[in-house]
Image 1 (cartoon, rainbow, N blue to C red):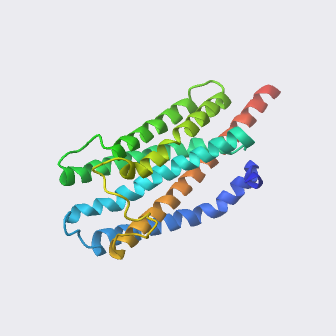
Image 2: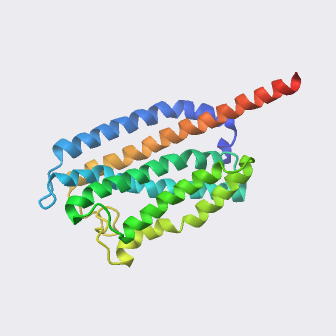
Image 3: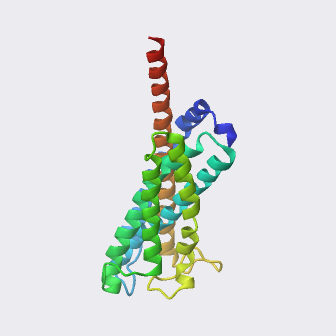
Length: 240
């Protein structure tokens, strides 16, 4: 990954791939929504309310995936001092927080007709709420210090310590008795969900992942360009 540590090389590469990633993300999400709303059948028990799944489940996947990216970037920053690692973590955190909030909100909408309550202190729900607070804490630490390096280091430590929550979220339904149903897609013995529901779910999942990648690249590019502008402004001020 040190090949892409040079900001100029990173900007050139991102300018090439970003339009393709954005186009694929838009296409996959459009296809996924069409299949979810018009092709996929209603559930025999849940009826049309099951269609919330096509946003809720991929959002939950992304909440855990993005935090994993942040933890990996934080480790890269602390151990190998990769110059872009902190930018990737900083750019990813608000996106992950939005996906986590979306997972909580759609889960609440889905839980009301299924469980009869907007919220229960279920192990899965509670651990996802903790993840949301970890995202907020990461963003707060990034901007809490006058020295950006100190803020990035504190946020990286929080990200690594908080990563223990990701496997808790994943395996909470197996470790504790919860209202939340077990995984139907990511199983060792293969998906237990019917293909008519599986394909739109996978399309939405991949579309969300590419959407995140496109947003992350845009945010990192913005940070690099802002750093260049600030450096030139500082140099000009010192010259005068």
